[in-house]
Length: 502
Ligand code: FRU
Image 1 (cartoon, rainbow, N blue to C red):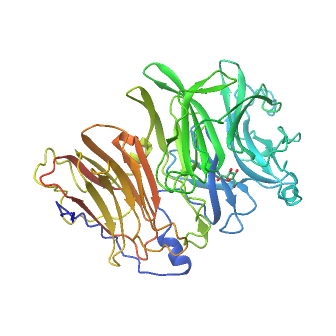
Image 2: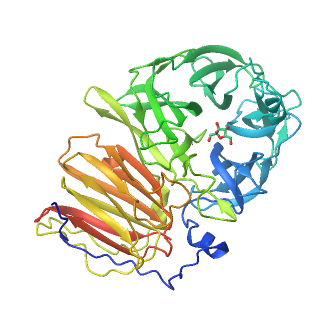
Image 3: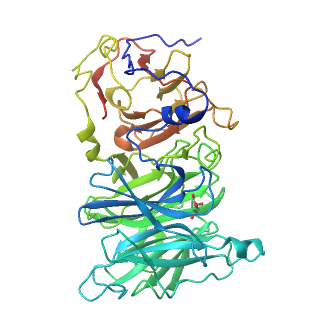
């Protein structure tokens, strides 16, 4: 039997003023409310929407039901931030109207006022979203989703719906939603990427109001275990080349069940997307990153954020007055790997500002077991960075109730894993208590892992973000201890640091 020896140990995270177990009510709510991840003040949240950077401010809109903590009539909630970490709640931006509730979409800075929605000389922000008309759906009609626009001429503070909505009618297809709009400089037009059943349709427009269909993509490409939703299309630079990235969220059919984000790499000429390959690529292998898309108007940076949940159990997770969080915002980059490329994601650098003094300093060339420093005291959330030789190893996050989450690498299978089979509450869904795995995407002999651990989630960024996994957990009392094991000794650690985030 392969027993994990404790090759070193003990970063004990003693949470200040430990919160005692409370199984119901607000208290439970609060022990599960993330500290450095965005959550709605109250009520339900799903997809991040319409993210746009304008005048030094990051806008985050999100699918929101303000009246209940389950999915329902969708609004666009709104928050603003200077760094994507510290968010200020704003009034709801878009309310349902006679055309429907407000499903997912995007927002752009219409720099040249091509839409004519702003008075001369002003720059409108334009949101492009899906109207979902439940009354039509209930009548058995198929054309209940259409695309509408709204605009702001006060830098995103208030929004007006365009009187000529919908700007794109439904041709009679039940799943016809989640427009992501970008300016395509080479053709001098706006391009809309739309999720339609399990395909992508591309449209173009000179003015954000009149849309013409250009092409379809997806019949023979990628994963089709469910409906395609929340797409995104953007160019990325790698080694002097431009490669277009098409993100496509999929529900269900993800690599670890339920919903997940896949992507394609290829070229785009303003009309048609041509993939380099039809294979399926996953942006995040964990169960709890979905509907992830990127901010508009961020220049050469490509900034991504996802919804940190899974449609399998999102409505049932054990919080009461609010539900769901966003992932840590991540910066994407393309990495050349052999003959192909892979999208890598790492937490945005803005997060570094929240690092507290590292509890464990660099240990150059530790070769006798792993010596991370004993009984360090910290509080969640925290960030861990580890760089060592490629060996089986795992971090265990645990508490006095014998609940734990393990995150690590298994050399035998070559997989990363997050094991939440004994992580506390899982009664709300039979698939929740599970061990999830991801293949490794490099043959490097070095193992690098960055973990962002908050009170109800862990995000693993391995090998510089070539593998990413996001996982929720709901312990009955807060996790307040951390240990590290490897079944190899000695083990060669280049560095290991733990930084509380605050
Ligand atoms: C994705 C999604 C979108 C839709 C929205 C509704 O999670 O299903 O396709 O616009 O959520 O809230």
